[in-house]
Each structure stands twice: as structure tokens, then as C-alpha cells.
Amino acid sequence: MTLHIVMMIIIAYLCGSLSGAMIVSHIMQLPNPYKHGSHNPGATNVLRINGKLPAIIVLLFDMLKGAIPVYIAYRLGISPFFLGIIGIAACLGHIFPCFFHFRGGKGVATALGMMMPIGLDFTGCFILTWFLVLLITGYSSVAAIVGFLLAPFYVWLFRPELTLPVAMLSCLIIIRHSSNIMRLLKGEEPKSLSRKSDKID
Image 1 (cartoon, helix red, strand yellow):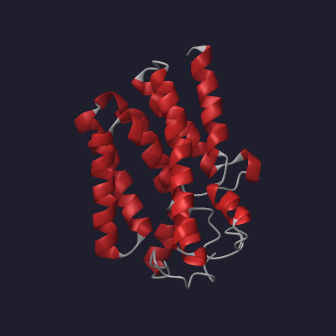
Image 2 (cartoon, helix red, strand yellow):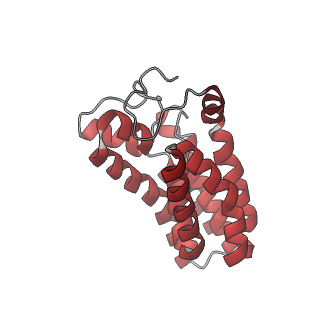
């Protein structure tokens, strides 16, 4: 592993540690996502408590912080495997942000962003799966879980050299959804467009 790969991993983690939900909520003087809704600093919770426009801005912000480090690394000629590792570093920053006491989100938008520069084909398959599952179930958490269960398969079809890092990323994000899985089993998970989520831990 060369020095510039190590530097890109560090940069990716620091980019990931910038919480779009917290930054946007602070600038727009909106309720703190850590204290309202599901208490998760992500686009879905911002949608529930603050509406569509802030949620869209947070979604784009979180996608870009995954996409930009991976794209820069791609332009530097870093190998596909390490592009995946750099993307994982950005997602780890989102999940365990050093700027926000290591309390972050689920990493879905950042993971989507990191996939886009290295493969629009399998990224398109992931997005299509996510939307279909969301339309069928109404749960963004279920859409994310199903999407990331299938993501390694999509990557294997189009870019097999990226299968291992994407599989690692998928495992990480599915584990981060363990609380959602428990709420789904109990029938307590709020629908993605619901604003009645202030009682969720």
C-alpha cells in the first residue's frame, strides 16, 4: 500500500465524518436530527422531521462525500480494490464521524455515492432495486437492506474485482440496520414518509 493510498483513505474518512444532516440542520436552523425522529443523522430522518428540501440537500451532501474521494482516487490511477477500500473509509467516517463524537448515520447515501464513480451500471441496478423495494414495502430501511444484500451480486456481474470491498461494505451497512430489523420484526418501524417517528429510539 503506497503513501498516496493511505492519504486518500484518511481524506475519505475525514470527508465522511462531515455530517450532512447536522450541517444542513444548523445552517437552515432546523431541529437537531440527533434529538428528534429516529435520532439518526441521515436523509430519511431529516425528511421525517424537516421535510423534502432539507432531506434532498442532505442526501446530495452525503452522496458527494462518498463520491468525491473515490473519484479523486480513480483519477490518481489507484487500483479498483483500493478504490473500494477508500469508499469504505468514507462510509466509516459517516457511521463513526470523528467530528460528531463517533455517532453517525447508516451510511446508505455515502455508499451509493462511492459506487457511482466506479460503476454506473451496478449503481443503476442498486438504485432500481432500492426504488422498487421502497415502492412495494414503503420502508426505506427494507429497501436499503435488500439493495445491499444484492449489491455484491450486481458488482460481480459488472466489475468482479470490486466484489470483495463491496461485500464488506454491504455487511457493514446491513449490521448498521440491525435496530431497524428489530423494529420491523416488532412492527414498530416507521414508514419512510412518516413524520410520526419522535417516539422511536
